[in-house]
Image (cartoon, rainbow, N blue to C red):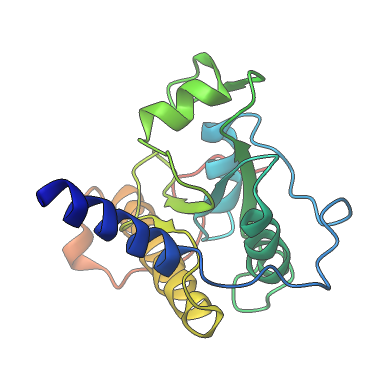
Length: 189
C-alpha cells in the first residue's frame, strides 16, 4: 500500500510541476540564452551593475525550458527594473567545459550535479562570490505566479550584491551604511 501511495504522490507532483502547456508561440531555436562560460566573471559583471547572476539550468530536450527562457529569462536582459542583469543558461546534458566560481574548468553536467539539479527548468540566482540567493525556482507550475517568484529571487540577489558592495566600501561594517547598488569593491570594466 505504501508503494502505491508513493507512486501516486510522485505522479501527482509531476503533474503539478509540469501542468503548464507549452506555449505554441515559443520558437525554441530563436530564443537562446548565452551559455555559461565563466560563472565568477559573469557574476562579477552583473555585480558591477548592482545585479545578481541569473542561471537557468535547462536541457536540450526540455519543452518547458523554452517557455521559461523565452517568457521570463530572456526578457530580463531588457527589463528596466534590472539594468545590467546577466542571464545565462547551463545545459545539464552537455559535456561542454565552463569555469565554476573557483575558476576550475568543469563540465556542465558536473555543475548540475554539484547544485543537485535533476529537474529542469531550474533557475538559480547567484551573488558575486558564488553564493546562491534564496531557493531555486524549479519547474513552472503556473505562469501566473512565475514572474513573482522570479522577481523575489532577483531582489534577494540584489540585496546580496548590495550587502557585499557596502561591506567592501565601508571597511567591512555593513551596519553603518545604507545598502547601495553601486559597484563598490568590484573590479568593473
